[in-house]
Length: 297
Image 1: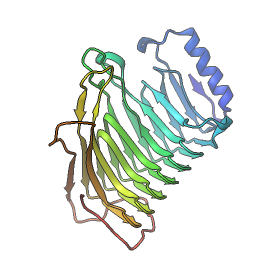
Image 2: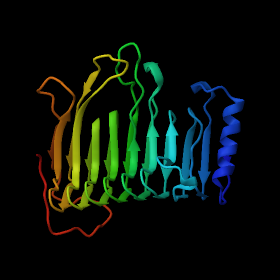
Image 3: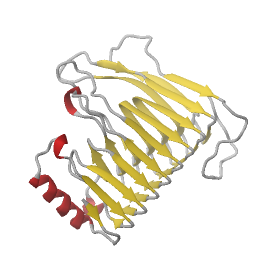
Image 4: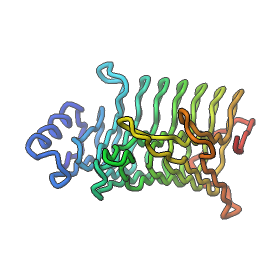
């Protein structure tokens, strides 16, 4: 399914994708690919199991319809390819991109996302730039279902608002972020927030402005369902030729923690700091505050 180069209304895309979903059963074998080129959109939400390719486009959402908690671009159990695209949102609890790449019941199907040369910006309290959401559970084991790889290259994420997150990573999501800039403004905000999951930042920078605004917060967590004991998932962070700068009272460059009610002790988060070259990170330029706080706490 391809949309031509034009301004596409959200209603038009919603109708088109809904019709395709009605004509085909909601299974992976019936998956189609929604292709967007040179378009201006209000939002993009293909049906479940549909893939999306977005090129040279712009998505702008100002809390359309007054409904909070939406993602301007939302992909549920499908592959995503995005290049040279800008996504802007205004509104509390909004997300610029929400990606949910897990298949139910660990049936061996995984999905991948690749984002290149794109920019994401949110304005609003508790808003999220890139949301790599919690995945589904295997009902027989209580474990989270497998997911594919999420790759973000040469892209920027900017958030403004109290409690906002530039990247939010949950469960077993694996994110590779290379050559990118992350900038957050707002008290109690976080540049990269993990609830389990894996992230590797290479040639990138994370800059925060605000009281209690941490660069990276890695939280290992126990995920469970239906009264089962659940499984502990470590938060795993690797920084390669990257930098973290914070400004504001109580702000920490890298904060590692573990949260679980009544859990056994000794389960922590993993943070690795690697330097492979003497060059500065190759990232989009930002003006940083002179106060710097880099390290683990």
